[in-house]
Length: 429
Image 1 (spheres, rainbow, N blue to C red):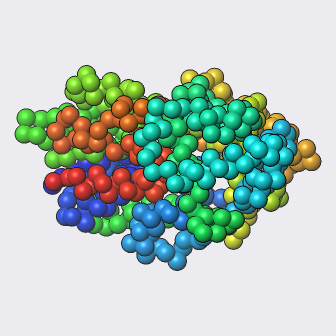
Image 2 (tube, helix red, strand yellow; image 1 turned 180 degrees about the horizontal axis):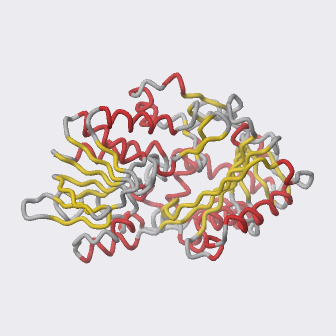
């Protein structure tokens, strides 16, 4: 069959690779100038770097299998991070259960309750019971109001902006479960995976395989219309041209699909419109020296303009960046006025608060700044989210939707994007 895939991110490229292995002809249409989606890269020094931070976990079996299939296992590194939390204008170690026990911002009882909540999440199998409860209510019920207001409230607000109080307990449960399962039997030790030369090497290899097998990747080619034909084929319109396919897989957000002028029934169109995303602003700083000894710092401060500080080169110590790499990340509603600020204004605001965190640091240490934005960074997992999810099989015959929003109950991540790409490819017949 002749198959079209809209989107050359992880899901799209994996699906294309799987379908080509089955003997199908595949054409990928990508709106941007390069593949990779949220894993797109830039050159830093003599090495590639993702514009949005990435790592994988030890239980991310699908992407590890893909790495093995692409003969890239020798490039996969397992590294031990040191994490921290910034709260009440102080930086605390936050890597191990011992760090939690010594965390002075909470009372001893609150520390125990918070630890038990995370521990219990690992063994909770029936996540559906949390769909009717908000993350806020689940935390307060199990760990107390103080734990919510000091730690998780600011984090949820900085992650989901105006929708923080609506987030399902299922979303937070999955976060606890995922991080807990990366430790295995050794509770004090966590391992994170990263690829030498960036995760971009995976998607470069996939793109190369697709093209070498006779597939096509059309860059700078947004799809603006998909029309079903009487013979059950689909016409795809891009850049003023029309292409005909037997099957079409759309791997963009549901909102983007809703704008493609597809004749969906009202009920399905309403599902597409109900799935919301948070945007993201991510600033990469190339510095002449490091800020701290930590890799991942969670910012639990309501007034800060960023929620995460990731000191990438404290995890990936062997590299060719020729700089110390820092990510500062902010999630927000795309209607938030902060999202419409210029890059210069965002840089000024981020650096202002970086100086609050590190009073002895100054801008003379900055070698280069990169700012990236995306409107579709984080699906908003509200209560009863499973009931608003659009199906992969759309009501239009031979048209499929495979988006990050449908990974539920797991949260976004490369591993689940790879799994979804394989899943939708297996549905094609």
